[in-house]
Image 1 (spheres, rainbow, N blue to C red):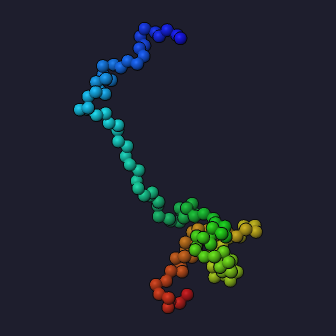
Image 2 (image 1 turned 180 degrees about the vertical axis):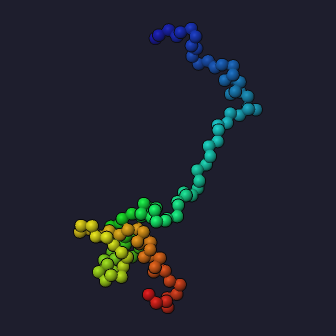
Image 3 (image 1 turned 45 degrees about the vertical axis):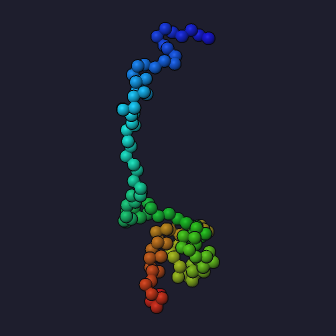
Length: 115
C-alpha cells in the first residue's frame, strides 16, 4: 500500500463540515428549480404551422383515429363521401389536418339535421 502524503488525511472532516452536520438550526437546502408547466403550450394552428403539425396516416391508424372500421373507411373512399386522401404510389394515406376538418364538417346538433 502506498504511503499517504502528509497533507491528505483520510476519513477526517473539517470543523466546518462537522458543525454543519451537527447543527440542525441551519438546515442545508438545495436551490429550488422552477416546476415545468403542467400543460404543454401548443400554438393554435394557422396557415404556416398547420402543415408542420399534421402528419400522414395509413388506413388502419386512420380508421382508429376516426373511430370507424377499416371496411367503412375503404367503402367511403370508393363512394367518395369519406375524408380526403392522398395516393402515393399504390399506397393510400390520410392527412391528420384533413381528418380533423372532415370530423368538424360531420358535427351535428340533432339527428334530424340534413347530412
